[in-house]
Length: 193
Image (tube, rainbow, N blue to C red; front, side, top):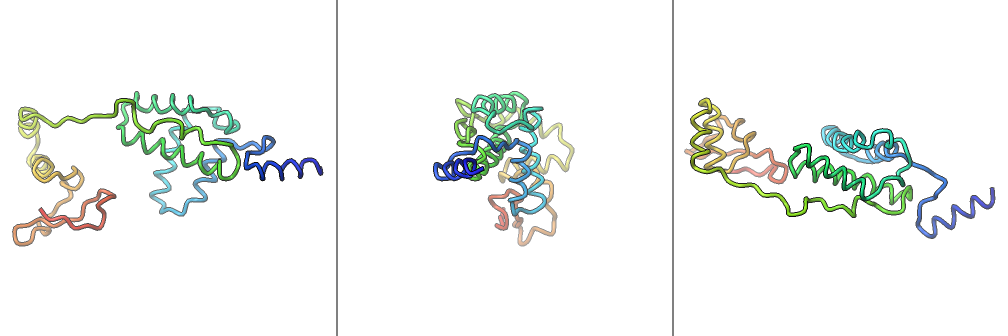
């Protein structure tokens, strides 16, 4: 009993995880979510993001966190990319996994965050190419009138499709459309086009 207390004390001083205390991915996620002081909608997004890794781990999600390796995170990242998810979505999911493991390091449940060893972005990066004039003409010809307007808003004013489809005539004053974009980085900023 004295020896256990002494070992715990030495491990705390050395700032390393106690090998006798095991924490599973499930428990780490529960603690991480409970520690977040986010709005319910944000919490649901975080829960969904880490659920991808939980499903990928399968039964291993109930095993000790120390069994998760950088190779596991890299394989998981590749499986997300291969599934057709957008690169930005893959990055958000990996960041959420990193965050869970970062908290586990702070709580000394693990010694290091193996997810930090894996790049957020694919080797070579991602590239998007602009539509050609012919592709734009095809899209506009196939679109119903409401969607054609939304497509033109996106093309001419750089609006996201959600912003374009939520516009109302009442937002036009003196020939100028004023609206607040939904994109998080621009929230609360009135844009005039």
